[in-house]
Image 1 (cartoon, rainbow, N blue to C red):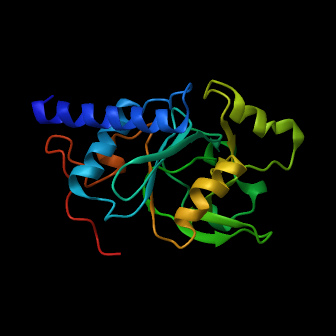
Image 2: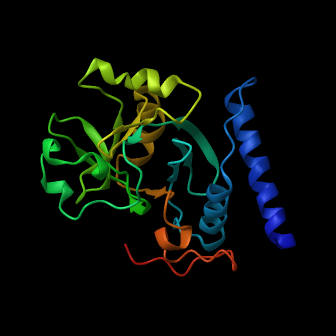
Length: 219
């Protein structure tokens, strides 16, 4: 690791620590994993977020971090994810009823996505991660009590956070306080870390050796 990279990572760690202390005097926010820190470094060095607020979702940790446009950590939470491991969505999955989605297809895709506000079939506001694949971020809800979605969110391990068809389930209070105010107008990004692919495969512009991104595409 280069000296400048080490300094930058130290700065990130300090920023995360200060944000955690400001949020709670006794409970520190879980640290970003090494891949998440690498991704944050890349985003900040290359201004890949284009000054927009964004989230980083670490699927292995089943955790979501929210950042403002200046790469400062605002909040974090445990989340629920697709029941199956994998970083891509079946090509036609967004057009199929849930009953025709096989268990191995219930994945949360990895990559860089614009967070787009929308509504589900019940008229509830959601944030689209991948509209074509019908993958969104929304308040946690459960049609079946046996799924124990709220209980899964509350456990200290990520092992039981895989339950959805691919959507990202967020605690309702967190969604209302941290996500809706920042992203309801469609001005934000989601970076979903892969669990099988490499960072370079999930984020084609990722350049770890240079610590910067290629120019972002026009929006």
